[in-house]
Length: 423
Image (cartoon, helix red, strand yellow):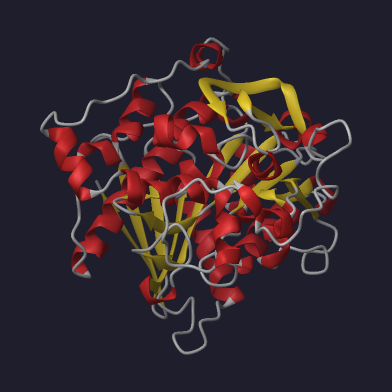
């Protein structure tokens, strides 16, 4: 690999070198890869039988499915229900800044319409005051397409007003430096925990430094290795690369993707807060945000298992039984060029989406994104492969993605609220 660090994609892509290495170890990389792996020519060849489909690697999904479920297990308390709240005033078209007041009102309206209860009773449905709640954000594309700080403010405000201590709330992602870049800092969120599952030496990854001592221990292990629980893992019969650059970004190689100890040892509940964006003809939203953000050693999985990881990782009790809410941040959305930030393809969408069922949520948002891409003149491939993983989740009893989905649209305006159920 030389001095340039680990590369797992086929260049070129349309973002700078720093952003490339930020993406390479995160949920975003697999989605970027899809734009290469699922080219129009390859799709056509596969459909006509000209390309052999490789055998699917074995995984330990059966171990997860054999664990008894709880009342909170996916698809959660409201299977198939997706609430969309729209307020055209939420983000200013000129400044691009979100109104904290309006975002808070959108959030509260979304929770109430999802549960059918007031804010206090809604809190009691999902949490106790003693829960330790992890808010999983998406910091990719800091400041442009990352999870809005105002959305996280609204969540924390709700939790705190109902008796939860700030010290019991943790904002987290896989990479610590990405959280900082996106504004998720102790200074911005005083009293709230900020945790990345791992660190990475950016200079070494970018080939700017030959000194691996900042991340590599003398015994050859990654400094972040203790952050992962080697007793709780997603196993797939795929080996991770052995070079140091890969290890820098992925902590482990081999055939095991370990869950972060933050999830296995500390958090009792999870709120998932992805952003509304594409990855080629697929999406990078609720299931991808958590599926590739909760475990290490993920790059080995992109080509052979890609979107199936977004189902199988979520089937493990550490996520399945703890992730009680999903809130997709669509205040600013992106319809092309994702999952990395591409400013010319972003737009003010001014929407928040709420669900306990992340698969129903992703199906609704996938359809909306397809409509947007078509309206912008993007050639859209609607092959079932781009949503097959969602149907796989339904077969496993993790979500509802068929005609039973109930999509409720809530329109906020100066004149008040209007609910428009959409089936």
